[in-house]
Length: 331
Image (cartoon, rainbow, N blue to C red):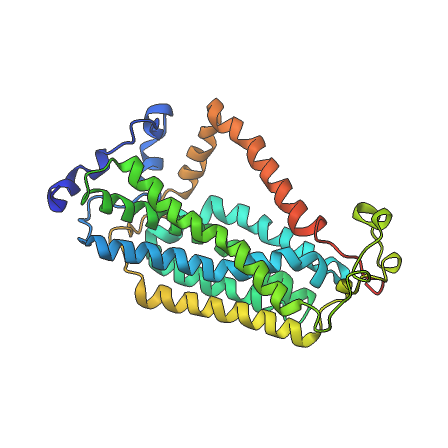
């Protein structure tokens, strides 16, 4: 299929099994014009298949590099940073600010700066949170957590818009429907996303593992003193409960910061800009888009997504805080 000839019909493309927002809801024109979708009045720069696949690999690999550190530290917050509850509190701050930023900032930032610039800027703003885990200070950890939360909304939106657009461009060069190409591209991204937990936990285990060999009969906890009844003084036979040393903490955080800096470098030098994702209209109809978002809750499909989302959030909090929590007797 000719790439140039197909660009004029891009705005009219719809997935056959998806009800469009315009068809299902009565949304004011001002709200539609302010959406975070791409500016189809600008002709996108042609990309070869190899270049598109290169961008897909770069953006997915950079996500894996950066979020390996974040998710690994998330799993350790209630143990490594349990002092005065700073670890769990920092997670609450992150997700609280993330909810606000996801509502208001993605459209404003992507429309004015483009996906690549947003990805670079938000990655830079997120790095201080990882670095703040070196020295536990309430002010620095909470401030960096708030900054991370504000940046996470635009980061996730820019990443999704970028993958969506390069998938559409790739679909024009092959004889496949758009749904199939979208699934393949987001499948590749999900593969790297799931690897963040694997490699994050592997790195944490390698750095924080005890140096001395622990005999198997000593490295146990009493069954009746586990779970909700866990207390350190009742499990003195388990040497794995010794908190990490300062050297181990410095090494772990240094590795994760280095991976984040590498992701920032790859974003800047190897990710191609889309050049049709800047409209510079974000400030004009921000309130209109917020109202149009609320209109989604007129439909049953959107309402049924709420309990699923809440359940996933509760499950995530259980794994990242309660399930991995250790209460040291000196905290």
